Length: 447
Image (tube, rainbow, N blue to C red):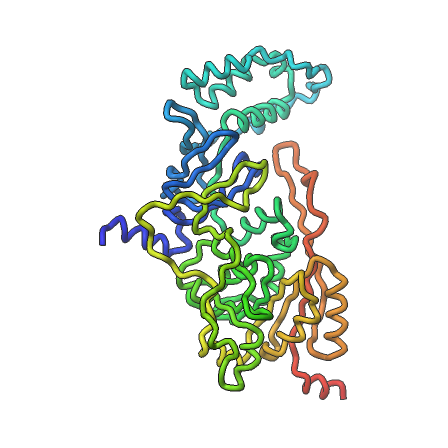
C-alpha cells in the first residue's frame, strides 16, 4: 500500500480529522449564511453559484474552517483559498462621527458611474472580484458621505455579488441541525439546536451507554447520539413499529468512522419484546436496510441554486476508481446485544416521533428500560406531551416528570452595534423528561 493511500485510509477512519478527504461530506456556507449546501467531495463534484459552476476539487485536503473565494479566469470560474486581512473592518480603530448620517442621500441610481459594460470589460481583462469591488467604491459619488456602518454594508453587499466566498464547515450535530432548521425545519420536526442539546442532556447520553431511540426525524437524532457516544462505546438502537426501520439518511452526513457506524443498529419492537420466546420474529427477514430515499449522499454533487440551503443534491458521475466501501450506519442489531438488552434493559430512552402519539409509543418502549433510567420525549407541540405526562403519573410508571420549553436568542456582537438578532424563531419544540421506576416500588411507596 502506498503512503498516499495509507494516509487517505487513516483520514477516513479518523472522524475527528481536521482535514477533508475525497468522499467525505461537507457543509458549504456561501456568503456568510446566505446559502447552505451539503455536498460530498469528489473529483467530479461542482458548486453552482449564480449561473456558473465551480469544481470542488480544491477543497479536498484542506482543513475545515477554510475560506474560499470565487474567481474568474481564462479557464472559467474556480475557487481559490482566501485569507482574511487581520486588520478587520477598521471600525475599532476609527472614531465614529456621530454627526454624520445618511439623511441627505437619495437613492436614484445615479451615484454609480461604473456601468455593467465596464465591469464586464474588467472581468475580460482578468480583474479579480476584490478589484471590481474597489472600483465600484472609487466610482461611487455617495460612498464617502455615508457613515462607517453604511460603508461597511455597501462593501459587504458588493463583495457577495462580485466576489462570493465559500466557508468549508464540518458537518456535525450543531451545524447540520442549524442548516436544516434554517431552510427545511419540517424535515427535522422543527427541532432547534438548543432543543437537540437539551434532549441529549436529559437523555443522559454518555460513553458506554445503550440508548434506545425512536427517531422519525431523518436520522439527525441518531447521528447526534452516536457522535456523543464516540468510537467503540455503547450502542444506539433504533426501534420501530412494523417491518421496516425509519430512514436515517441524515446520519451519513456526520462522517462517522466505521467503529461508530458499527454501534448504530436497529431492531423492531416485535424483536425486542419477543426475544424471550427464543427466536426473533423477523429473524428470517433480510438483515440489510431497505432502500428508503434516493437522497443519500453516496452520489452527492450539488443542486441548482434556489437562494437557500440545498438538501436534495444532483447526481454527479462517480470516478472510475471507487474508494473502499465503508460501513453504513443502521445495520441489524446482533442477537447477543438484543439478549443483553432484554436482561438488563437500556440505559436511556429518547423519542422524537412527531407523527406518533407520545403516550402510545412510550407505553410500548418504556418497559424496555432498566429501572432508574432517564427518558426524554420531543414533540413540536405541548399538548400531546401534557397528556402523556398525565398518563404516566396515573399509571405510576415514572417520577421526576417535567415538560421543558428551551429558548435560544442569538445576539449580534459588533463594535457599537450589539443587539439581539432582528429575526429569530419563536420556539423550538417541547421536551418531556423523567425517570422510569418499578411498578412494584410505586405500589409500595403509595401504601
